[in-house]
Image (cartoon, rainbow over all chains, first blue to last red; front, side, top):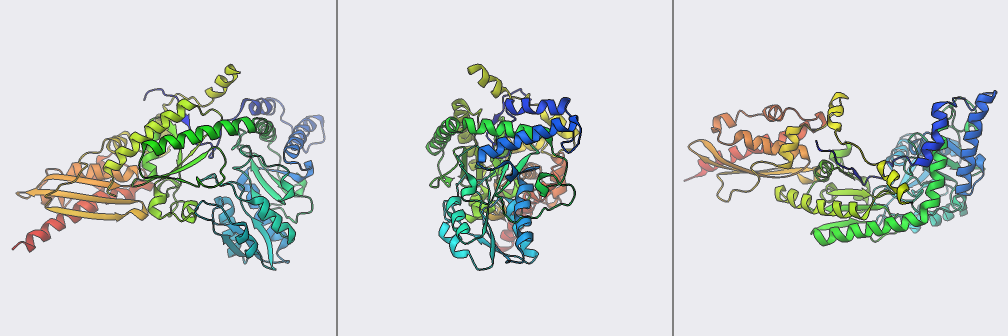
Length: 386
Length: 153
């Protein structure tokens, strides 16, 4: 196989590690092996790195360090938020509200809680993939204990009105959680506790390492840990801290915030160029959630008459990385629950490919991918029986 | 600044020869034969005056295939297909038609999806179901041909 340069347009899956995160991690991979819980100076070195990282994360989100609970990543943080709050609040009520377009780590957790005796409302979305705040408010019942709505959708990039929904929840004294994994580093989040009680973020979607994330927990939010063990992380997440990853997380987060304004404008322009090129060159395509507020890097395109994995493989053979929510690539029996929630038919959803741009994406790459897609779609449509 | 950007960009660059490692690690992916039949499928098209036709699969479940055969003196003298589906579906459609081309109907009736998978040198386990489509369509097109013979006045 020829040596080729990779064109990576799958940043919503994961991102490469930024140099600053790598620098922050190296000492704790190489030499500084201490356990942050140890009494001695070797342990204290590690403790001070973890606490410095905690202060950085807290400053970014406008919370106090004690309100930042490090986890192994987004899935764990989402599980802690939903299961932990449900367990803590079960005597107050059994009704939980979430949306139909959540990441599986929220969706499947909510479904599991449903099997455990909780009553779950899955809010629908409009054709642009956005939850209506009124629908959320209308779903609130006297026994509602928790609302969880993601900040930005991983497949379409559609930004949800979390401030409004969170505001309504707070007014009624209901805990509000938002999975901000895909929003973090892409759109400004401000002081998250003004509208949310719990916020999930993860490092590796923002040029940090895999293996570190956080659940930000507003002081006073009822929450019980999922695991028993040590006293770590304010008693909410036992287990020896992943010091290197946590340090890398904080360094990456600092960079993400510093670069946010300039990068989001640059990437949005590239995304718009990409979509304009596709619409110009390829007939019968639809860009999902194009009419919604979106994070700047995500473009979800339906190619009519063809199946998305076939597009992905053609792209991959050219060195281009993208992703699809098709049943055939994810091992799920149904294609993307997100696109189905937007009202797309199963056949339409089968043809959806997600392109997620990032820091290293260039105009040249965008033009290359758009041109490649025009050829790939033409070829697959010639073979297609539809 | 430009320099820094270049360094940053290098993070994305890899020598792209991962397929050997993939197979060594037991990572299951399409082999070169499957990829060849996917990228350059054989017998794509339609036959206007076909003797047998089949439409199988369900696009809402991810795949659909149309298959046409032309029969002369008991032999499949032409075969064409169109498929909507994943790479596995397209490659197995291509291979099924390749195997059947020129075959006597008696032999073509004996073809199974195992023959297709074997001819392709194997396909990933989670793609086995795709391999059924090409053979199912072939058998259905042969049945369609036979019915037309019976019904012919």
